[in-house]
Length: 157
Ligand SMILES: C[S@@+](CC[C@H](N)C(=O)[O-])C[C@H]1O[C@@H](n2cnc3c(N)ncnc32)[C@H](O)[C@@H]1O
Image (cartoon, rainbow, N blue to C red; front, side, top):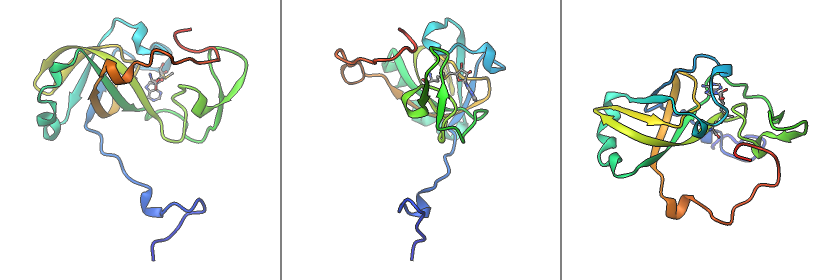
C-alpha cells in the first residue's frame, strides 16, 4: 500500500525537480537584486545544461519568455510575511515573496539573443547561480489578462 501523509496526498507525490540549467545575473546577494526583474535593464544569461539544449529549438520565435527559477537561498518554513510594500502581514500565497514552501519564482523576460545553450535576456530578478527550472514562450493572448486587478499594494502599483 502507498503510504499516505496527514493531508491524504500520497507520499510519492513529494518529488525531486531537476534543474535544466542555471541563471547567471549580476546579483550576488538579495539586496542587489530588483524586487521584480521587469524594472531592470541588466543583461542576464540562462545557461542550459547540454542535455536540455535541444529543447531550445524555436525558442527565438517569441520575444518574451516565462522563466521559472528556484529561490535556493530563501526560507521555506514561512507561511506569512510582510512585503516591502506595506505594514500588513500577508499569507505567502498572496505575495510574490521568494520565501515560501516551494520557492518557485516567475519572471517574464525579454529574449535578446540565443547562442547555443545560452539565452541572453532582460528582466530577471534571480540571484546569480539560481537553479533554472523551466522556460516557456509568453503568449500575450493567454497570459495578459486585461481585466485583472489586485487590491493591495505591490509591484507595479
Ligand atoms: C520578490 S522575488 C520575485 C520573484 C519573481 N519575479 C516572482 O514574482 O515570482 C525577487 C527577489 O527574490 C530574491 N531572490 C532571487 N533569487 C533568489 C534565490 N535564488 N534565493 C533566494 N532569494 C532570491 C531577490 O531578493 C529578489 O529581489
